[in-house]
Length: 208
Image (tube, rainbow, N blue to C red):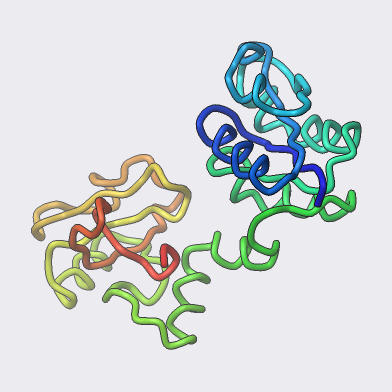
């Protein structure tokens, strides 16, 4: 690869640019209208404005980022972390345009992005996983029963995204309805035993 487009900003982009410079790889920075004077833009060999200040108009705008890579003849796109780094649709779009996505294969992103599937895959592979529900739980009663089986404290994780994760220390804290009030329709989620680990309040096979 002789040229990489960095689909990110700030410190993340700066670190990638400096690493590429040490490796003799040219870099293309992308930026929103609000980040025109940012350090990563000044450090990169080339730069392209990809949209407005709001991330949905720029750093999350897949068509604009792909177009920038094609215009600048970048051989690969490095997503950094955050934004589109775990977006399988973005990785697939890169492949379709003949651009290398610097990250996990699309299949791996899809598999590990689905929490229930990720946990099952890890268990099947013999990777130790914390005690918890075998799959999705759909009621407070089911959560209470499983929590009693594995022992408190437990963590309840809604299946709809990273925002809905809470812990309960006793039976009186009824998890789905009260601890995760903003969970997906039907209150579907997971329940795990947990302990602090490297700054995290829980550990899962998908995080390994």
